[in-house]
Image 1 (spheres, rainbow, N blue to C red):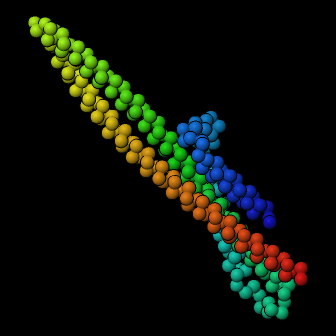
Image 2: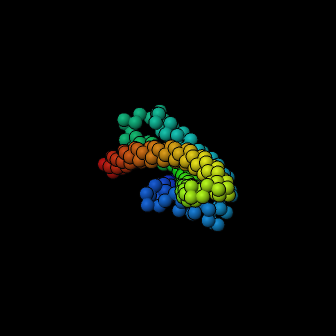
Length: 243
């Protein structure tokens, strides 16, 4: 394996490790968000679009180069009859298997590069939605506590008003409390609607993340099958060559 394909293979293994790390269930999105917002990551993220596009260009170039090699060795390589030249046949098969291996490596590296970008985006969005949901729940709880307190105060003033019908200030205070209670109820209803909306967004994002995880698992199984096929073909070629 040449230096460039060794680099791409190492890059692919690093991508697989990073995706597996991002999919760990015990690391919460909020913790990932803190990691993404750390000083070192922010310095790198300032030029992330440049890095992303550069790696996309490199991987695309290598992918099409590997595809060209596969097309080259998949057809007749020369006018020599391969049946009467087993060494030439083994060499052609070996080059074809190597080209196919390089094609798989470049293709999966390119695909996982998009997967990593998408996973980071989904994790950041999920962390933001969780933070907003927690803030909305706290706000709703505060509004509920305020409403209960106003209702208790209103009830106390109502009892005072019944004991002394001439207490005009108590009646006025009761009206003010009733108005404040209505406003608190409206604020509570508004906060509940916002909380329900954020919960729907959070569930949608969670379903998207689960779909991405399933697609990644399916592709990893397919990659293992292809890698086994390539390794098996390489072994057969080497055995033929040794015979």
